[in-house]
Length: 104
Image (cartoon, rainbow, N blue to C red; front, side):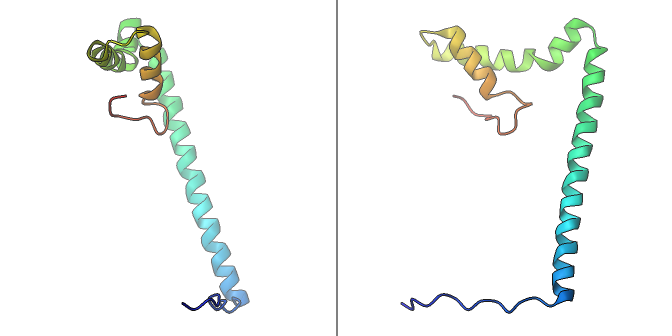
């Protein structure tokens, strides 16, 4: 095996540096725009939810995940069902990033 480090890339020219910075800036602007769009969509969804009657609000937000959790709870039958269900709801919350979709 060759223990020598790989050769360093030659330094970028000013034009190359400028192009790299412009590309980085475009990526950051794209990410910022995506985040702003997500926030706007979330605000719109929140305002829609606030105008719903109680039953419709619960049917759209809580009931589906609660029914899934209660179904899994009935299968598992843990000794601490309230704690288990609370954990299930947190782990499977669709509004959390990285929420798991499979069983516990």
